[in-house]
Length: 359
Image (cartoon, rainbow, N blue to C red):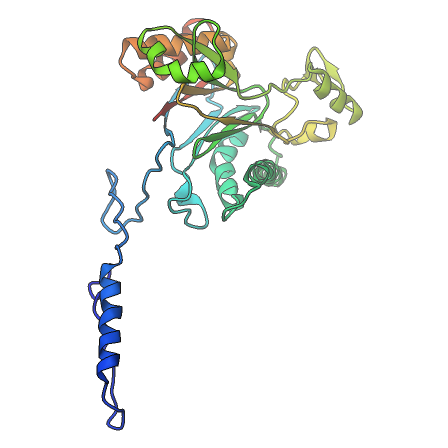
């Protein structure tokens, strides 16, 4: 704040300017009085780790606080081909200052195949492309704009990688799945390609109770231990055995053998895989929107290495068991979940992102 905001600007008076009248002096005093009485803007509180002079943002009331934790295991593979991104605050990457209008977070896991170049490229570039295309200003049609932004972002990232891959000698043949979670205030958008998955843990009151009754009794029921975990799928799997995916591949001139595109590629949508694009493999993600509630606990984003040995329900219950025993230690739960996947015999790379939801 300027130290001289409440002082009047000096006025230059020329010699031939008439003196100020009493009425003008009184009017000027009233103006100054009104200015002094106007409330000043409240200074926003500093966050831990902020330097003086940094742009500060006030946390909006009722908006969940998301914290991301990651665990990665190479398994029996020679190379770690997974990649991941945790951006609890993506606001700094946006080309304009969203201020206190909204809070934007981004988390993503990429499962590479044929090499690690596609997954690493997507991890480096996809959220940057997303930030550049993120809709500016307030709009009533924000859902449609964000969904279009996600589709355009995936297409651009795929095109950019394919252009770079084809320029190499020999050309890169890497590909990658992608499961990306974009949170805008208390709304989550999940965009995914391939067989990596996203699941939400939501607590609900046990027994038969209407939605209104559950909301009113949620606190009491939880305290009494009468809440049960419900697993909600936030992504769709894309493989050539799914009817819609197989029909698209066959219409493009490709074939599905042994559950794979041309008998080789295990997924039907991906970033990269240039040699399969002419066979109907696309980079258009499936999109899901989810409104978070006070009963939501966490979201798991993970590659198929986890879900080869865990069902979605098993993964959610495993995390809940660790969290309850270790006093909300989500980091420990994430590490133990990935470790347990390897212990159960998963030979693939395993990457797990656990996003806790707090209010």
